[in-house]
Length: 217
Image 1 (cartoon, rainbow, N blue to C red):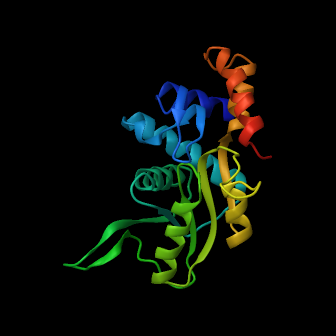
Image 2: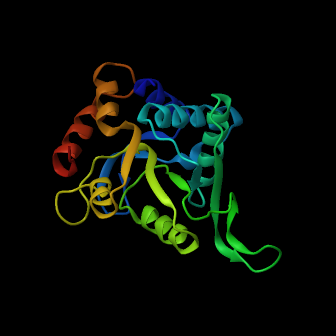
């Protein structure tokens, strides 16, 4: 898996952008990642391949992929398809925002979770870890599954609101769950440095300064 290929893929899809952005945290960031900007069949198919490669390289072998609504839904489906093309057939499921009160009912679409399932959560990014905590609450209310790990697109490698740990480090400490990323903000900075990303050099300085203020290793 080539991290720089993935970064260029995100940039070309308008998912990775540079400018002046105000994050939910109130921080002023020189870059932004919005996976809601993927919009073509070709893009989502390619994205699934990147996720599948990350899972294979990490050596994770789940029974089920879980995608949190809403952005996690196409991610887990695309990843399941990509894995199937590589000869790895796994189930997938995702949650409804509101429980269905007719027909079969329930909050889960796709594979119906059961005790002992090995579940891998497919996410876009982790900023504060809120979505992961919500996913764990939903899943654990349904069955006693084995939450294996989480796979995300980009690790922002930023301090949380409290202390010097990142949200990913907090998830690891709190739940014992590893978070694997396809690429990180450090990879983005390296891509700019090496001229592999057609970005104005001013953003390299801004990215480095932002890392000094909020970054973690």
